[in-house]
Length: 118
Image (tube, rainbow, N blue to C red):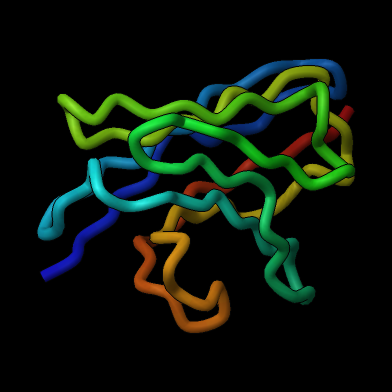
């Protein structure tokens, strides 16, 4: 059974930083590209970043490019997202998921809330 557990969210002021973590189990993590997606309250899901398996190539949404960094540790089955220079518009619930799945229906955990406000 695929299981994903997100953590690391919190409340920060604009310009602050957070590091999100995603613990994966139940599948061969090292073989899958992984996504971070986010959902602001009352809005749809947005793919934020993707990292491939093996070679670790990365992709970022324009809205976060240069501020967020995705990484993975295959030995620990862990996915990370470093959030820097946070803006109020980054406020959302953040989820991790496998990139081979549609983000609307992907297996995901409970999410981790990021709130950016002054």
